[in-house]
Length: 103
Image (cartoon, rainbow, N blue to C red):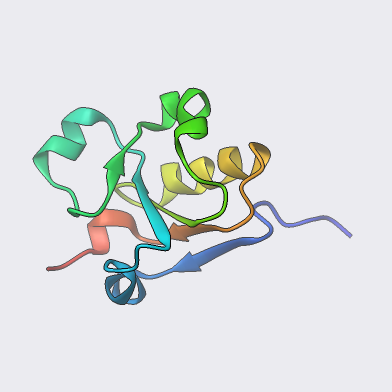
């Protein structure tokens, strides 16, 4: 049987994300480009662009759940896989990304 890509990666919607934003036991990563991040982002998210995530993974805590967002959910899904490969155990992708975020 083929393994599904992204096993152990949870998916949440932006609606499910909202109650988590005040949770200090979680870390929030936005993997879009700095330009995209500057235009619009969710305050609690830290910008680590996907292309530099591997080099910067050491700045994150492997003990915390890591919630990853991008514009549509594609780059954040890739980022979740990168984090998994780096040994992060609790990784969550925000499906639909900022496209489906409404304040």
